[in-house]
Image (cartoon, rainbow, N blue to C red; front, side):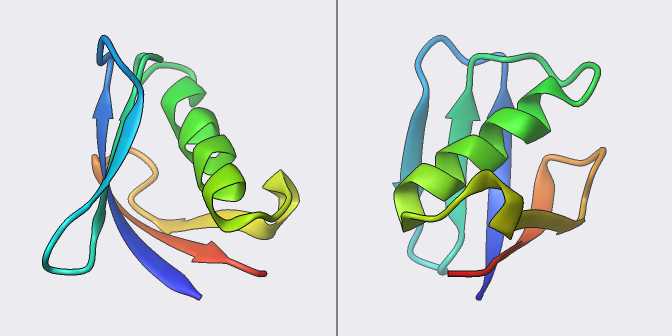
Length: 73
């Protein structure tokens, strides 16, 4: 399954919101330095979809807030 994600790094509260256009907006506390925000996004998606971290992979947007993520369930 492929999911489009918009990431808000450095947020005060972590949350996941489903948007009307089918994307997910994910707010994480980690800053977008040293890949910390990307790792936390992968962890949150793994929890949400009930899978392991190894099965969640960022396809595009490694250094952008807009990402395409592949999740193998």
